[in-house]
Image 1: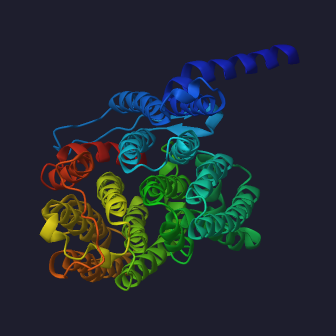
Image 2: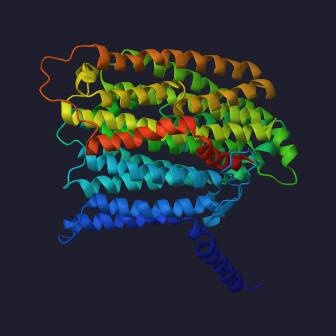
Length: 551
């Protein structure tokens, strides 16, 4: 055998795979990378400084959105009619198996790109960042989003770690954007310290899993784990895998701001600008949930093949363990987030705890999907679809909430809930918009948040009847319902202050009117919250296709 010929064949195959298969499905990420380079040039070159960095970023993101939409439309099985026809997820492995391109990847990338377009418009209206810091700010935002896109498509544990760090490190700098403010610097420092600790724990857990299973490729890890499970986990292997899995969970929980790894979230949201809070709340949460789905399915649900049925049965105990861990964290996260939000006086801290609570609801859907995977694959796909639909509506709800906070900050010079007192008398349109967003976050009809929670709770109910985790799923259903009732009090308290409390005597300025550029932005974000509560079949069709990745 000629080793030179073998090397040449290998290189030729790798180049062909990269150019023909991988790069055409990597266009949204390439668009972000190219835009970051342009933004850095705008910062470096004197002539390029005349360009508006927001418009440069918006152009690059719009290009990425076009590619993301093209990739999503090209996925087989998209059913716009909402008839319930089975979706089919075409799956490709990119760059030698480091990344996976499937319906979940396409859907999450589409959400992230769409969010970035709205986010850049929001920051342009709100005035943060200023023109001097714009290139730096948008470079960090796009760099973090690039890491989040990789989180959604990670197919290899080295890529899992790299993607999490690519998303996290720029976020640390964004938290300290408000230079000269002690709370902003403190927020950035806390975020970085907690992030470094979580990353170290996660990396050690990944190394344990790779060392025991002998591979870093997620689908192959599932096969190896099934073989070990079939032999009864010899030589303490099960304990090592359990410890490694818990360490990886710690890293994922940090990104989700799930209890008990949530401590950074309220302080960072309170110290950072509201615009940064919106980015961390929506984009980071979306990518973290996608990565959680990718990891738990990659390890506990083997890919379809000749031995799929035997491997699926052998991994039953693994799915039981994963379901228990996620369900426990979901209960704690949801409950603590809602209870802690009740006593908050700062609107950003309230929304931070609201973000934590919604992470709990999303984790409930993931737990239901894993519990159903070994018993009813169709119901498991529906549970994943419910989580994906929740992420789509959450984008508009939370971005609208933070936009209202940021724009009221500009006019009232305060982010305290008490400063909103009496706004109904001078700005009834803003109070109505705020009411729509907060009621949707509660999950009341006929708004988008109601449909999201209904679908997640319906998937948990399916798990109660169809899976072997009936007691656990029943607890999730009860806790989710009770927490929805609890959230009613602190969200409506904000509306009570706006509508019934007298305005503060020291108020010297009124909030912005709806008939303005700021009001148009708020209206553009609130309208989908209403329409997706009534006409939700289109978004659900997209979410169903995303859920087909679990096939």
